[in-house]
Length: 240
Ligand SMILES: O=c1ccn([C@@H]2O[C@H](COP(=O)(O)O)[C@@H](O)[C@H]2O)c(=O)[nH]1
Image (cartoon, rainbow, N blue to C red; front, side, top):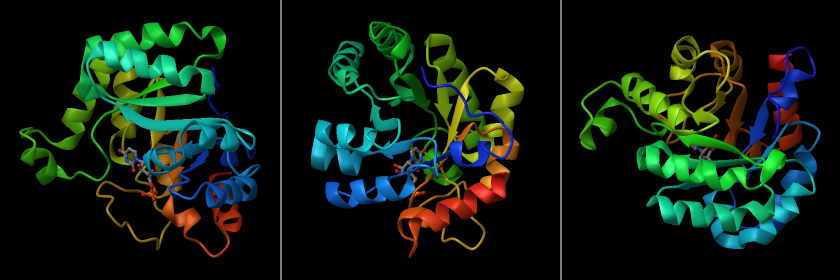
């Protein structure tokens, strides 16, 4: 399993996970080549995976370990089967929605264990970082996002998840409540001056790491920059 980045100057780049959100595999490969060495992990998300599938994971893995952010969410048997299909791609991390419940997460963990010591980290997505309190209320959850994140996080870790995807706003709470063990992977990260876009619960890279993030996920502020490698390097320098 991939280990958490350690502190110190080398820790800055290792904590960064650029999101290669494009449906164009050639563009994703060019970004991966430019960003390898300036990040710890590269994220293949739904846009790239739906467009290019397994070959995209293999191509990006030539540059850095892959975070396969497919957010699995189905009945336990189906999620276990999906994971069985994904394990030969040897992703370093795979996401599943905590809202799928404990039986789904336990089935995923059991399947992941079949890959042995090289298995991926299973990360449970709590409340999407694009959702504010009003969006959460529209799904029937009247609690504040932080309360719902904590509720889902406790359940997911107990059921077998290795870590959590949360916003920077909940990272400190999760660290305080769950301790240093669970991996915290944090999107909704915006360098000062960057547009939030559709993200609702955001903070800067340094704020996210200070709050307890092990890794930060940064997409458009890097991939939309005139020089993505320089943008990633600037974020890393701010974490050093
Ligand atoms: O709650 C979540 C879970 C996953 N994501 C993913 O992270 C990146 C963020 O991209 P930006 O361009 O930096 O907004 C994207 O791939 C999402 O699918 C998330 O944002 N929030």
